[in-house]
Length: 109
Image 1: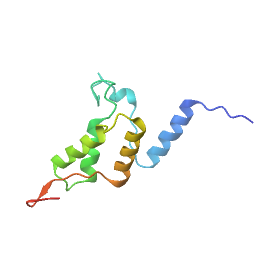
Image 2: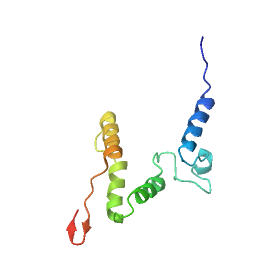
Image 3: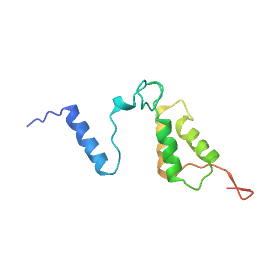
Image 4: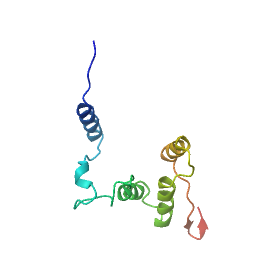
């Protein structure tokens, strides 16, 4: 027995699953470049910077802005020309956290 999958069916199942997990689903065309609610200036911007920065603030409410900017830079700027190494590095940052230094009460933490 063979089963034929239709891409839109798989996409809808994934979207429903993500919605059930608490994610907000947004139609891509609504946030596309040129739209009133655009979240990037062009399609070359593969990261939705505003969303990443908002998540960093939400997850780390007591971390100063300069440390959050440092974390954002580390997440968005690959450290190597090798795709596999960059994927591994990003996974480690997401799983284990991102090391940043900042001043707190006169000392570096």
